[in-house]
Length: 140
Ligand SMILES: [Mg+2]
Image 1: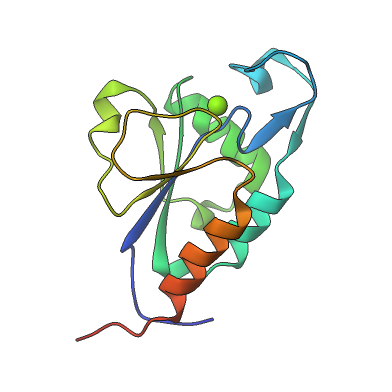
Image 2: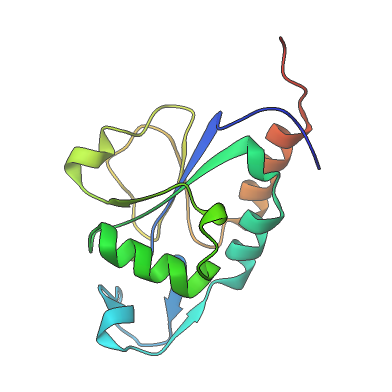
């Protein structure tokens, strides 16, 4: 799928219990990667992001564990192909203000942001959002 739209949808993706999943019974697994907890990649989510028209959205990986942790998880999930990810951020009150109405947040927890929020398993809705975006020819 090719189109000319760039970055009009920004997708903010959480790390622990979103990009990587844990089998442990704990409800959340902060710093799970660094703590050495057994994890598996949320392949369906990663595949959906990889298959979407890459020029149509901006991909931000963020974490309450900070930008360095977000980068570490991102490397584990996407490899070190920097083309996949646009930014790594600390996720918290100050950066919540970056989120705009038309953005999409994917997180295992509900955040204090004003945009559509998807769970890590809301794949059909994510496909709709990214596909719809990719299928529209921009007005010039
Ligand atoms: Mg999380």
